[in-house]
Length: 350
Image (tube, rainbow, N blue to C red; front, side, top):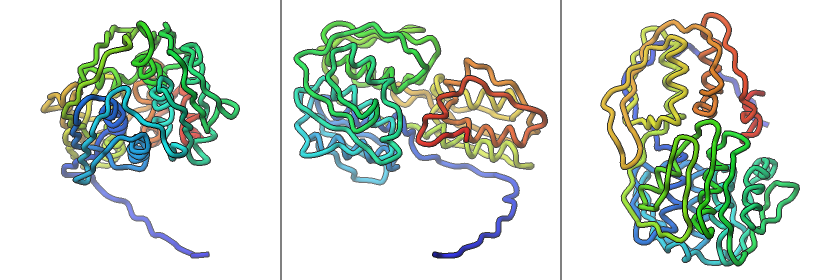
């Protein structure tokens, strides 16, 4: 066994500018929708992390030609909604919960059987939240106690449903919407709290008819997706680590370039500002359907807060780093309503 030791010194101030890798949520969806679109979709700013590469590998196994000519460039040769083919074996999603939950909806309407699985960690994660609404749509999916592997069998026709999300989950919403692309009639998803809307925006980018209102989203099965060019903004969840580093380190002045500021994701910015962080948003613009800006963070003393429950779904992935900000703040920070953190790829509260 290798023995190792480390000496850690304080890092001092955090200054300069950074380009953060691409948004993970958008990268997943660009590949999935590009695969079932008609034509060739070019994606720049793609995140080449293991989770997103797992989505690429699954789509390749389903017969989609995908090129990676650069480190963050992906070219997807779409096969259309009915063009996916029977895979030769299991479809391995690795450790990616986004991959398996969204792909379950996408594959529920196919004319062939498929099996989605993943690593040991992913096979322990709950899947009932997507299996339940898909069952209402007449999908034929078999699981191991509501966990992967998931065996998805073909059905004659998926049924459109009206579904009220029991938990605030963009993955569940997206799964139902993707299945709705193959259902007969209009599929409606109602949500009591705002969740990430990357799937809705991406469907609009692929020219798929979708109706979005404040508390509901609707798609009608039968339409087609048209290939497009996508530039993916920098991932706000990744940027949050550097934002907190600058916020808690004296004499810091940091600029993060081209960061996605989708309003369903900016809870981390709002919460840091509530704690007293000095954050400036500038150069706002759009990459297709997503809002992008530069974020400047300067050091400022932080104060503990009680986190509003309506901001929890808008910052669910950022709470581990927000806890670091809270630890460095003056006073007590209180968070409630974040049970979702218990069932991520790890128990993030623990």
